[in-house]
Amino acid sequence: MKRIIFATGNAGKMREIKEIMADTGAEILSMKEAGIEADIVEDGTTFEENAVIKAKAVAAFTDDIVLADDSGLEVDYLNKEPGVYSARYLGEDTSYDIKNQAILDRLSGVPKEKRTARFVCAIAAAMPDGEVLVTRETIEGYIGEKPAGANGFGYDPIFYVEEYGCSTAELSEEQKNAVSHRGKALRAMKEQLNQYTG
Ligand code: IMP
Image (cartoon, rainbow, N blue to C red; front, side, top):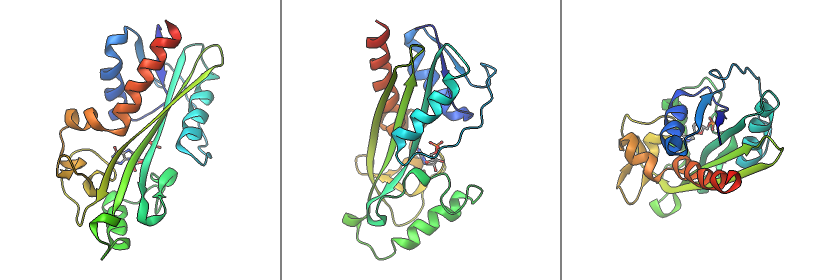
């Protein structure tokens, strides 16, 4: 395992993957660092499909291993919305203050036991030989009654984790990475890659 390209333009995700993959000895590059520009249409209906679409699209430009992720929030009471549309929910440019408030409004009066939700993350690895590896992990929680915390991003202020008794926006980056959907999926992918490349 020499070079791994991560198909994202998100600096936070790059930081996390570099930290988790540090002990593999592989050089981890963003698409930009690898000089790859690709406009990818994420038209899959599952997180796994979208991760595979992104990884394969970027793999067309390189002989290195390409990793890609797709993630989002599933709210059980809302039939697992916003799901794969999490980034696009109410429009890509709509602020998360508005998106989060809209979810709170839709859950108004709904008791805690029916407010269950999870963050999901799928990671795909497109290998130079054409093989594709996929991992998928979740973090279970519930939608709180009001937003709290200023860390993290996206839906973190309304997503509460029972074991911490607070929202994921109130956790430090280290605390969140230890239990998050993305942290777990990345560590699972690291294991798969180790086995695959020997
Ligand atoms: P993508 O995986 O970059 O396509 O986007 C996933 C979207 O899901 C983000 O824009 C957020 O809205 C949401 N999301 C995924 N992971 C998290 C998280 O850890 N915290 C908060 N929101 C998240």
